Image (cartoon, rainbow, N blue to C red; front, side, top):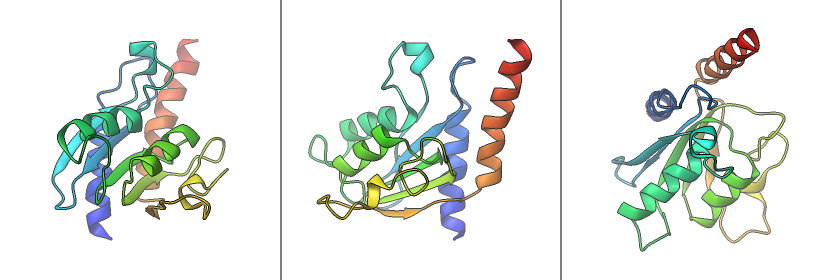
Length: 153
């Protein structure tokens, strides 16, 4: 799906805003009509906040401009990397309709790799999920970051 490619490309652009010490992960929330509502990059190091993942920051910003205060019904979130448990839980609780992501994350992924929080039948909301979109490009962002940090360390 070419449309999903453009969503993940926007997340790749968002990842570029990550500070030099933050892992370059980007997230963008789109409204039901495709309008960009919010974007963010990881900022845990920059903010000294363990919850400052790109998805959480983008969801918070989107909730300020869309919905009834916190429900993001009908929205799509695009992320460069498969969300972790915290982020997967947050997007489920926000009632995001669709998750599109790039690289799979076998160590912490909670959208099909290590866990599958987003499709757990016990939850009252389960978004549609499409993973692996532009996976090589998204994985390259991480590989470059960790190679640089290993070389500096």
